[in-house]
Length: 185
Picture 1 (cartoon, one colour):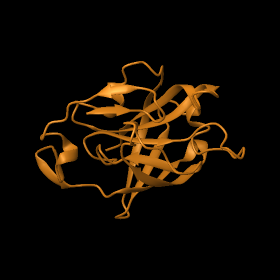
Picture 2 (tube, helix red, strand yellow; picture 1 turned 180 degrees about the horizontal axis):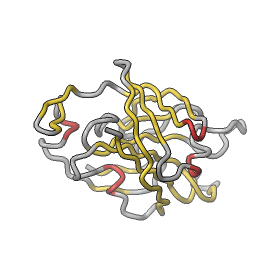
Picture 3 (cartoon, helix red, strand yellow; picture 1 turned 90 degrees about the horizontal axis):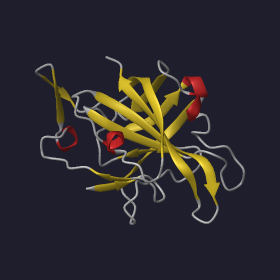
Picture 4 (tube, rainbow, N blue to C red; picture 1 turned 180 degrees about the vertical axis):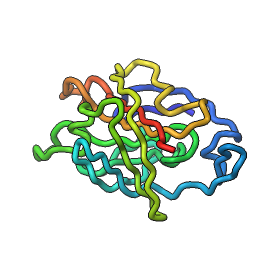
């Protein structure tokens, strides 16, 4: 499967087998089968005052990951794991200023540092906590397979947004910022 960040940027080739967590209805952790987490509906990042609705997106017709419909929502990539499941769940959001000059949900994502907390609430009323491990900026042509895949058997949530210089002709930013987080157990 080829996965692209929103609006033409990073090409990822990921081979998923039937043993990957997102194709199963349960996750195996410490030899116990745990129920699958619910669908993400809310994202909270206290340090940067984010408390927003999470939309569900797949791939757009051009092969890129879908993006939120508006400036203040986030979007979960529904072809990967749910937040809290084994693997790397991915949520993206807009950065910069929206068409009318309004601020966007991930304007301050760059301010997150190691140890900051991120929370995802699901449609079953459960909240999963994550802690920031790292952040990296990616060039549009760079290999970013580590954003959508993980083989360490743990649950991760990776947050993506645009960063860098706005390219009017391409209608996109020059880079992508990814904040990597790990589930708090």
